[in-house]
Image (cartoon, rainbow, N blue to C red; front, side, top):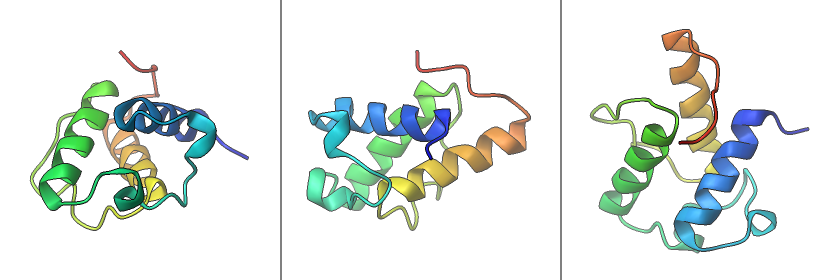
Length: 89
């Protein structure tokens, strides 16, 4: 079962990569949808965090290989800040 953060990350990723949300899942490998280089990953994570009103910090993109990794990062940062997901901008 997906939670709202899960769904928001998938929706964001689909829009960001010009795919349909039903083509993206937590196990989707970012390289398979065009997020190939480390710089691509930094840009993706920066934009994703911005959509949750979070701030990119050096190293946030490290180890992000699948969509589920990005979801886990967002959930961790939301928990750290004590914020609840408010939806994308």
